[in-house]
Figure 1: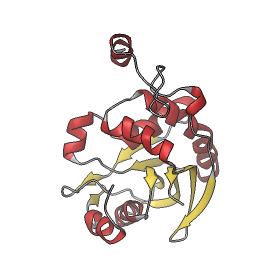
Figure 2: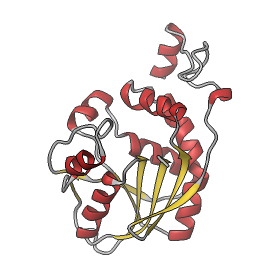
Figure 3: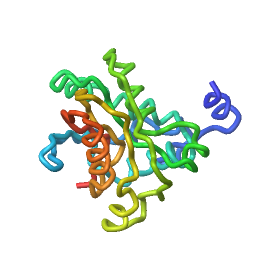
Figure 4: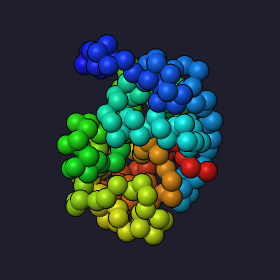
Length: 203
């Protein structure tokens, strides 16, 4: 409702083409480029190859709190999330935490909001948990591979998962540093990782 009122008072422009429309017009919406990958022998899927256009959408969503984009992203994810859930039968979906500063700015955890929206669309009843941050971390964007790895090293913590089957989810995977830290935290908490799903992967 709040987004509707903002758009009514200050008409939105498409984040891609700049034409007056909704924050993303249908002609500019990126096409899905679904693929599979493996991270340290754990099977994974991605919905988009990362592109400049998708980057603009994610930046608008995460940096400007344009939550309208969560609808597009959740819809794009939904059928592929359904397929991996049906295949792996997870009891829990785990997403990464946001830093305290980012959560204060946004009021939501981007990855969790996207996957929750997708689950609502497909009707699967799978619990979503967010890993706890043990310390403050910097935004990964703009960091090189080594700095990314150092930035998130031992930064996540989970309660004992007692062998639960876990699907890991994140919005973007670039070098894999954040996802590997999610794997470490989940494994140390005795979670049984059955797969990885990311919205976008840098190829």
